[in-house]
Length: 149
Image 1 (cartoon, rainbow, N blue to C red):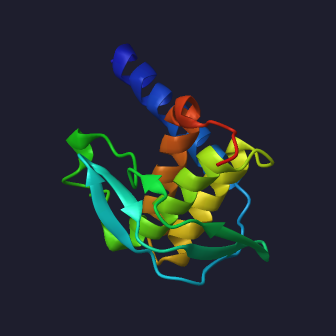
Image 2: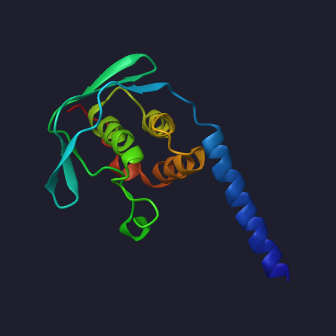
């Protein structure tokens, strides 16, 4: 019985920690001016078939034509639950990939907050957006390049 109580306490602490992470994320107003347009490129990679304009906090970004993306980097095991090509994930995933690779002046945390905000702007439920946010905060560090395209 003691092991079960400790296990439940551990799960509760993990849950509170993750809820705190999401609660501390700042919301950024996002507006996708252009719809996302992608074409298959190689394997599970895609390219944008036209430039995509986006505003974040009233600042304009342009994701160039032929920008390479893997969309949402969801492990294949989870594809039946979170298909990376689901329409609500496409534009936010492209934007997040772009911010991770092509903007030396932003932090990884900011890029992750933008992903969360962009998912919400694309009518993804806050619960699902929170799972994506937690995923990139916990596992996205190795993909953050902090460079300029």
